[in-house]
Image (cartoon, rainbow over all chains, first blue to last red; front, side, top):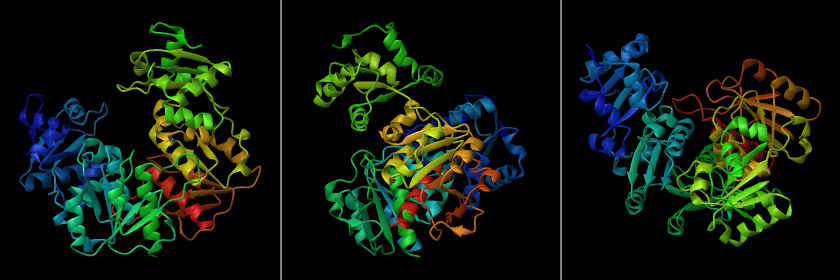
Length: 265
Length: 265
């Protein structure tokens, strides 16, 4: 049976609230996801929260009740609490009435089975958690296997990234690695590393993409470092028609990922 | 010669600060853009601010000095002020050292010359100013003529939208219209109206796009209303590979816009 918790000082409430902070997420190995839609997505992908918090209203939906029951049956913790406390957890005025704390999967790139998908997205030093979440969502839509985060990226388990991913944080594999570690792993098996560069000669629509394809997206401001570009198997450019010289990083990822998929049809 | 202004109570400072607010932007017909890169972009597109504010540091760059001189030569107002005041204008801790207030172009769709570009983006009830700015940036990159905002969209002249547009707010035409007004204008000339819909039978890669093409993007949550879809000349779907059933609105715009351009090569 779920416990009733109405005190901000309660240890579970404090733990859940702390997960808005990156250090706490790392220390606990947990992250927050909010809302019936995304928790259902997680359940459909075989993932249950370790802790689920909900309001009276949040528990009323049959799907929510199923998730709460399943969480408890799996040994997780379920607490019924107030809208006020849920609002403090999510940092929103109109909070979701159902919030789950999930275990972060192991981050090592070694864990990735590259044969599982024809396309993987690799992001380097992306600073915006919204971009990370959006790229996860794009990866899900295009049938990518997951997202590999290189160097210092924003946390894919931040509330902003999880929200922008619209549940794809549960369907996409997520790994993090430094560049040398990533390259070692990549070269230990099959894989075409594709970078985009304004200096590249080859048009992105005319290139030949091979599976598994690793699409490398650079930092929002600087793009890819020259020595990373040098290690790509293929460098392509998306010709820009306008005055501005670049696309938003998440847009470039979407345009490239869908063009690569289209080239395989 | 620029005036020195260091008081928060100065009328020009107050006016510039007020432009973070939509009502004030509408009343004044002005909007803010920040930073040397974007103000240079504006100047290269033939646009000068009516008011330019800058710090000692901001005026030091030769391009900034040119913009300040040109603004004054065109009868505009130039004020030298403090980093603290610039920070209050932009709402950022690390403000840009150069800020301009620009006249909003007339918003009427009647003003648009559709023959100027092969592609136009039409967004319906988009709520996120970041999405609006990103779509403007995508439009610039893909060679679209501009963005037509239907029904109640976020303000394209908000600080967030202008920032996300990376200068494309100056290179793309921007118009706003209610749906009946837009349709009347559209049908008064050539133009193929293309909507994306998960219910559409035709794959977006197999459709035939005609110039001028008007790409219609629906609201982030609801997508397009059924009666708007019914008025499209072409409905296409982007097949989704994953569990989630949709792309982010700005991503869908980018994938569609680049696929349409690719189909014309």
